[in-house]
Amino acid sequence: MAETLFSKIVRREIPAEIVYENDEVLAFRDLNPQAPVHVLFIPKKTLATLNDATPADADLLGKLLLAAADYARQQGFAEQGYRTVVNCNADGGQTVFHLHVHLLAGRRLHWPPG
Ligand code: AMP
Image (cartoon, rainbow, N blue to C red):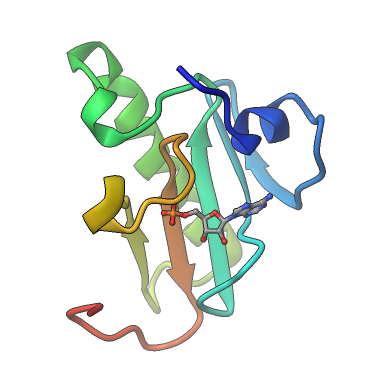
């Protein structure tokens, strides 16, 4: 599959403000934040969209969400609350085709998102 700039961030070939990392997951601040906290959690492994995930990726998908929750606790806003979002393909608003979980926090978020 085609490489995206997120793979380059994993390899430290382009800069990003990395805020969290473990063996399989990397997280960095979104360049165009939609909330006071807007962090993207990505698998280090390349996976284009949620549609491309298989049962073999179940553990990895869980680890992305657990990493987001871990970060929220570390940063002290877990109790106040936050939102996690995975956009998939055109109607979902996906623009970067390396699967990622958005973590948004720091303001009251509306639902539905529109
Ligand atoms: P999505 O629309 O769900 O694919 O989200 C892609 C997100 O990546 C957008 O919120 C962009 O602002 C963000 N983004 C694009 N390029 C970069 C980059 N180089 N570093 C950090 N965030 C980026």
